[in-house]
Structure formats: C-alpha cells, structure tokens
Image 1 (tube, rainbow, N blue to C red):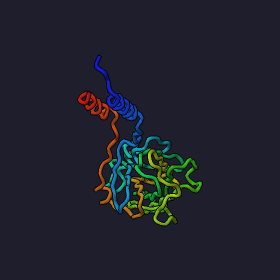
Image 2: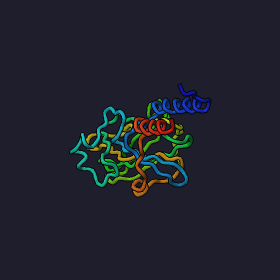
Image 3: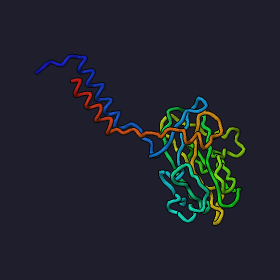
Image 4: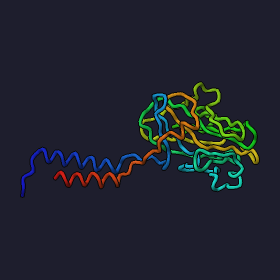
Length: 224
C-alpha cells in the first residue's frame, strides 16, 4: 500500500470538511430575486407574489379578473392582491451583511389611495406591534412608497447576515378597495428606488450544492 504523508492526510481532511459544508450551506427560500449595489450599499428586490407561505392573500394568477383591472406595467411577472384585512405573506432570503435596513414597496390599490400594508423584517411580533413599517398606497398607479413617518424608510429591525425573514400583511383592504403589491426592496443604504433601478438589478443565483459537489469532486479526483 502506498504510504500517505501528513500533507495528503491534511488535504483530505480539509476537503471532507468542505464537502460537508456544501450540504449545509443556507439556500435562499425565495426562488427568484434581484440584487444590486447602489449608493455604495447592497439591495435585494423580491416579487411580493413569490412568497414562501401565505394565508388570505392571493397572487394575480389566482385572481385574474382583479389582476386584469390593474394598471400595467408590473415589474414582476405577477402581483400580490389583498381582498380584505387579515392574512399575510412570508419570505425568506439571504443577506451577505448585517446592519440597518431601509425598505420600500411598489404598491397600488383600487380605492384611489388610502390603503396600506404592514411590512416587517426579522420579528415575531404581530405587524402592528411596533416592528413594522406602514407602506401607503396612492391609487391605481404603481408607485414606490416608503415607511409612513419613518425617516428614510428605515426598518425598526435590522438585517442579519445569513437568513432573514419578511412578512407582508394588509393593513387596509376591502372589496373594490383591494390593496396591491408588486415588488419590495430592502437596502443597506437609504434612497428612494425607481423602476429603472429594479430593471438594472441582476438576477440572484441560488447556491446549488449538488452542482458544487460535482465540480468539487472532479477537482478532488484530479488532485489525488
């Protein structure tokens, strides 16, 4: 049997650890999103219709009659519709940094203004318990809206490095006054987003452990 020297043993141990890590790397629960680096910060842009879990809220594809009445264009392929108060939509995503968070939503409504949403980051409190932002709608025209009475739309709670959670909940909505949500943006720096900012953002890529495993294993075989 060929003797195995210490450096080879160490290399095998390190590679084994890396392979194990590939299986436990956190993968964003949100399957599609965009990222940008504007104003010397980091931003993530998520379609409100691409929730991980929801109760009482529906994507436009499930409420096509209402969706067809909305003004276009949407930035996302679909929108989120609240037909009544109550219900929620949850999202999980990965952040490369921790710290202050500034949240904006692209929203509209069928009332002509005066409807609103709660949006809360990394909190188990109910939406109106002080950890949320209130995002006001301004009528049927889609518009970027920040937190009511919150300078620069700063979230009361911060981003975490790694897995983060967001909950969206209608604060006001009713029949013929449905509240609509297209995209929400979370940024590490304060600024008012534009449609163009979203369109220029790059699509995010999920970590694919299986693909990485194939690549890494091929490198191991070439090495040894």
